[in-house]
Length: 195
Image (cartoon, rainbow, N blue to C red):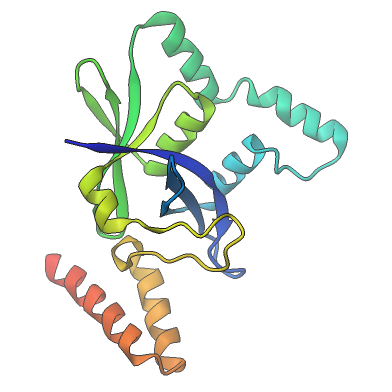
């Protein structure tokens, strides 16, 4: 199967009132993007690694020192030191509003499931571990990349949680956006049929 290598562009809030954030991934050429819903913890983890920690100078230095000993960085160092594994994180599917990923040994093809946000964090902590997505999934799920300063992010409905779908449905009805409401209702019904 063909794969597309991804770059991590950053993490952004979904809305000012929602606790979830979006991890923005692009292809290497930065032509298209994929948005992954992640929690506040992941937003914080990516933020401190990208130097977005806003604290006193002494605290920032302490955080930088602690980052050397966090799980992704430490596990990466152990793997490089003790094995000849050639790892990659691969986004393989989307099911029930969540992307599915695996950590794969590129030599043997052995794969272990992992949350996409955790896999991306591992790739960010170790530049030698690439992040990929299956090409057919990329073609279905990605949208044009508008740059880091773009307002708003387009997302496929099949990547939203039921809670987010229901909130969006209510908001679209209130705003009299009936075509969007129909699409949201269809996605909610489709998921209900699978259960």
